[in-house]
Length: 211
Image (cartoon, rainbow, N blue to C red; front, top):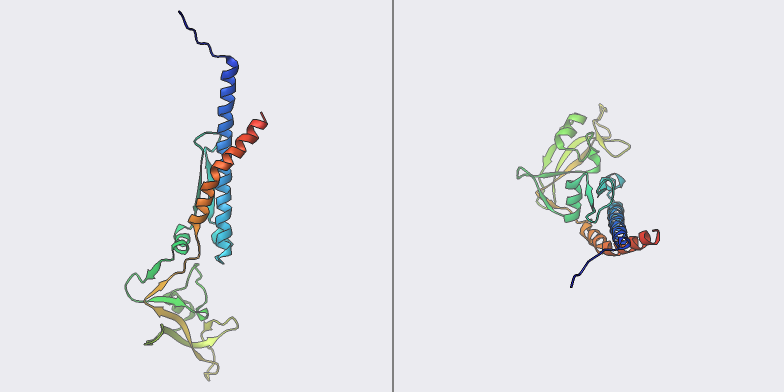
């Protein structure tokens, strides 16, 4: 008895078409999942009041860059990982040198370099000297004698009589500060991951219906 195995070319073509449909479905699903997660993270960041600039630091990319693959993947990341990570975990922040953390008040204004202004930068910018005031209860202070401008910022006074001169708190001094947890990025990531199988099936159906 001789057995002969022959594969119908139509079946081969059908299998190849099915694999191609799967590749397109998986690639499209991962692209959708990555884009959706990027959008969810950006929405969460702006919803937490952290601004669109930080939200726009969230980026996404899908792989392969060209073509389709059953091993397609998506990557979502931030160009500001330290800031995003801090708001996502709510860490306890201490001074690097073991002394004080200087928290600027509204009278301090903002840094010209971005971020929070430091006592040294504030003194150089205003020409005023900061004076330390220790308080047993509550944070200690760095204060300066000057006047408050229309924006509520402390500046040097040009008055020769001392009129309008006030002692303004410029920095609050604390040994440590607990940053509140304002984000839950893992929650959105888990949702995106759980949605992938459904996206693959939906895209596979769409691809096959278009064949």
